[in-house]
Length: 348
Ligand SMILES: O=C(O)c1ccc[n+]([C@@H]2O[C@H](COP(=O)([O-])O)[C@@H](O)[C@H]2O)c1
Ligand SMILES: Cc1cc2nc[nH]c2cc1C
Image 1 (tube, protein in one colour):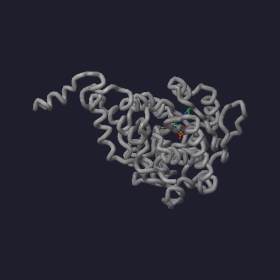
Image 2 (cartoon, helix red, strand yellow; image 1 turned 120 degrees about the vertical axis):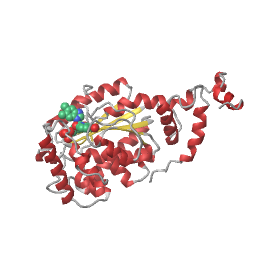
Image 3 (spheres, rainbow, N blue to C red; image 1 turned 180 degrees about the vertical axis):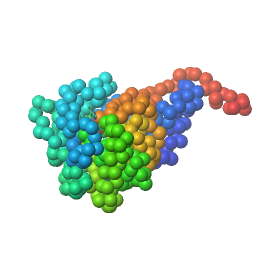
C-alpha cells in the first residue's frame, strides 16, 4: 500500500469555511493554518491521541558518544510504564494513551514492568564494526511499528505520536539524517546528554567514519546500517499511520530522523506530519527544513525525547482540529460580518 497524496486544492474550501467563522479574518493566526492542514489530512475533530514510545539500545555507545550509562534505557522504560516519567505525566494530564514498547532494549523485562514486549534484539551492533541491524531484523522492527499503529487505530486513536527512549540514539539519528540529506554531520550533531566540546568532535568523527564505512544511501540500507530498532519501528509506524490518513504528531530529534527515512521510502509521508516542536538539539531545525513539513508549533528548548514535545503540542492540535466543525459562523451566530459589510459598501 502507498500513501495517498493530499489534495491541496481543497484548501480553498476550508479557507472559506474558516473565514465564515465569527471572528476577524486570520485572527487565530497559525492555529487557523493548522486547522486547514488537519482538515486536509482528515476532516474530523481530534480527541484521542495514542503515543507509541519505542525503546532500544545502541551498540555504538561503546565508542564513547554519550555520557549516559546504558542501563538508563531499561530503567526509564520501567519508570515511564509505571507512570513516573515526563512522558507519563504529560500523557496522563492530556488523556492520551501511552504504550512503552521494547523493540531492542538490552535487558529482559519482567511482566510486572508493564513494558510491551515486542523485542527484536538486545541492542543494535556498533555500526563502526558492521551494520547496526540485520536487514531481516530491521524489517521486523518496522513491522512492529506498523502493527502497533494498526492496534492503536483499532482502539480508537484519531492521531498518533511517536516517542523513543534509547541511550546513544542521538548518534544513530544524526548518522541516519546525514546519510539521507545533504546536511553535514557537524550541522546535525549535538551534545545529547551533555558532551563537552571535545567529546562532540569525537561524536562527529565517529559518525563521519560510519558514513564512509556504509556508503549505501537507499533508505532501507541507511536504516539497517546506521539506525536503531526504535527508529525502524517509528519509521514503519509512520508509514502505517499515513497510509491510514492519520495525522502524525512529530516529536524531536530522533523521531524526526525516523521521519526522514519514512519520507525517503514514500515521498508523501511528510504531508501527514504535524511538526510539534523545535528540539533544543543542534541540527533539528535543518532536519525539519529538509523534511519540508513547515514550521514547528513550539520552541521551548526541550530536548528530552520520549514524545514529550508532541504531547506538549497536543492541546493546540486538538483545539485547531475543532475549529472548522465546532465554531459558529457569522450567520449561525447572527453576528455581522464586518469585512463583508465593508466590502459591500466598497470600503474594504
Ligand atoms: O528528542 C530530542 O530532541 C532529544 C534530543 C536529545 C536527547 N534525547 C533523548 O536522549 C537520549 C539519547 O541521548 P544520547 O546523548 O545518549 O544519544 C534518548 O533517550 C532521547 O530520548 C532526545
Ligand atoms: C535520565 C534520562 C531520561 C531520558 N529520557 C529520554 N532520554 C533520556 C535520557 C536520560 C539520561
